[in-house]
Image (spheres, rainbow, N blue to C red):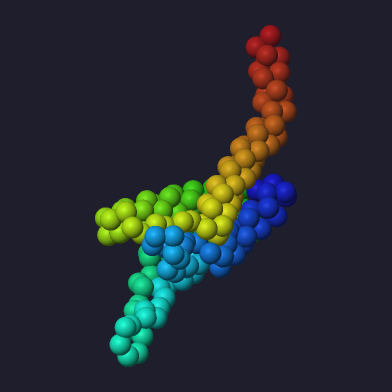
Amino acid sequence: MNNASRKISPALFSLGLFCFFLPFITVSCRQEQLITLNGVELASGKEIQQPSLFGQPKTEKIPGEPLALFAMLSGLVGVGTSFIKAKKSAAIPAGAGAVGFILLLMLKSKIDDVVLKQGQGFILVNYGLGYWLAFLIYVSAMLVNIYSLLMEKDEQQSANLPHQILKSKMIKNHVK
C-alpha cells in the first residue's frame, strides 16, 4: 500500500463507522415522524415506548438488523486491515469496503420491502445523512484501496523493468 492510501484508508473507514452514530432511518406515517434510528440502534436493536390509551406506555423491542451489524463489522475489518504493511495488503480493505456498501444496499432494499408489505403505503422510510455518508465512504474506501493495488502493481512492474531490459540485452549479445 502506498503512503497516501495507508493514511486515507483507515481514516475513511473510521469516518464510515462514525456515520453509524448519525441518523440512519426515519420512519413516518402520514407526514408524522414515528421514530428515528441511528446505525448502531438499527444494528443492535432498540426499546421504544409506545403510548397507550389506558395506563402505562407499552415497551416494544425493535430487533437488531444483521445487515446493519455486518456493515459495521466490515468497517471495523477495513480499519484494522488498513494498517497491514504487507504486499497486496490493500485487497482486504478494498473487499471490506465493497462488502460494506453492498450490505448497506441490501439493508435499504430489505427495509423498503418490509415497509411496502407491512405499511400498505401509509408508512414511509427516509434514509438519513448517516446512511448515505456511510454508503459513499465505503465506496470511496473501496476505490482508494483498489487504486492502491493498481499503483502497487505498476510499481512492481517498473521495478522489474530494468532487470528485464538487462536480461533481453544479455540474450541478444549471447545470440550474436
